[in-house]
Length: 241
Ligand code: NAD
Image 1: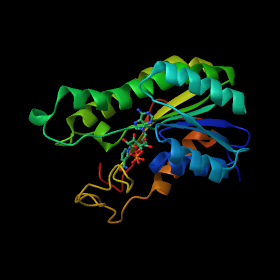
Image 2: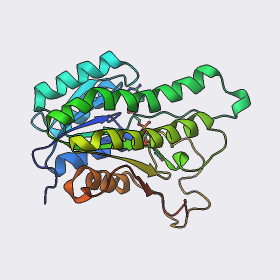
Image 3: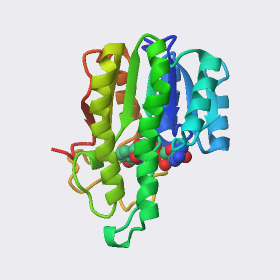
């Protein structure tokens, strides 16, 4: 069954990695999807693969409000009001706090936190116009515990989790649910450089796959999750136990 038939979805950072996996899943579920990213050639190729009747790519820098405003206009012109928003764009920079530049720390905050705020601020009114919907904010296990050598990312992902609760409270009267997701380690371009695909204290000794996260995102985008808002959804192979 197609759980998202007739819905329009917007995915930030959807040109590759987990976002691209969600875009493919959304189309399988019957949605039309708009992918916003900095990676124009990857994004255009993905939209072409999915077909112009199902998908569009729009250049988006999630840290720039004007870029979001243009992306909203392009999405609505293509497919009408958006009712599913996935704030997925994220970056991580590795290194100990005492060696991290303010510039690098700030870049991580800007993409993960400003990006989620601006996406909600600018696309939110489209969801209101659509009569309600679902916002899925991509946090991480790093938004539930501390991790060494990635303090900016930990701070940013905790912020995404907290922002989600504030947004859930404000947007509930408009019929909009807002939840955060907390993936464990999944093999993508973001994590390809990290030492092992399986965390030592992960109970399920198999690598996480993008489809594991897309299963959750499709559920949260659909009416099957109608009774959940303002909460954390963890898919991490049993790391946070
Ligand atoms: P990825 O690096 O493969 O994809 C991230 C995408 O975001 C890229 O396409 C990138 O171009 C885009 N992006 C970066 N900065 C942007 C900007 N300023 N404006 C627009 N787009 C921008 O990473 P991924 O593994 O697919 O991660 C997706 C999300 O999932 C991120 O928020 C990440 O923190 C989170 N996450 C990933 C894992 C994992 O193990 N892969 C675990 C937990 C959380």
